[in-house]
Length: 213
Image (cartoon, rainbow, N blue to C red; front, side, top):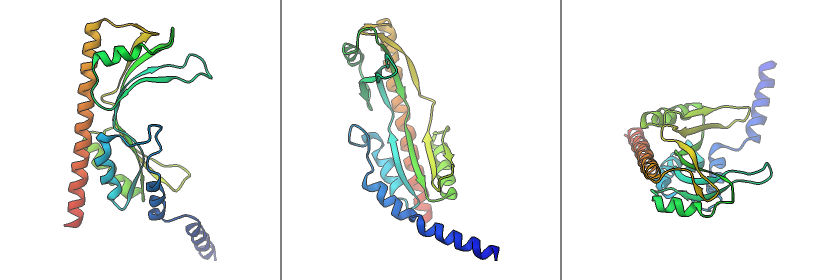
């Protein structure tokens, strides 16, 4: 009797929950929800490769970026970006961007690594993509499980992250030789990020070919 009740409960729950393919179609219909209104070009091939696989759909992504960020000056006053680039930047671009800072504001220079969030059909699918991601260099990737039926995988790395004070208002806090080296290092980190993204794309392509063969 207990097994029958459990079976009926499972059937009702199954009817209430849309299939993964239906849910995936809804996500793809509104794939980009970023403020800038488009996906980051450097990561587009990887996003398309993941979404072409039946068992996965990306829900958010960033290809990695270099930013100057003016931190919030009070709890109800939001911070703001003075510079955002998903490609290499120049020292001049950074110092010019600093001219737009508010008086006395703390401005940080950041190099942020790539991150993707992927909704996986089940835990087995998540584990397989996690293994490929770690092998490609995204060593801090992980699977998130909660009370929701969703199985989410975060593909990420912190190896190339940078953050340090850059300006106080429009005043540059760092000597020019240091700024030059900092920008050079951040640009190099972006290139390293792209290499990991390309490796993961290759891993996905090889896995897809193996499945078909």
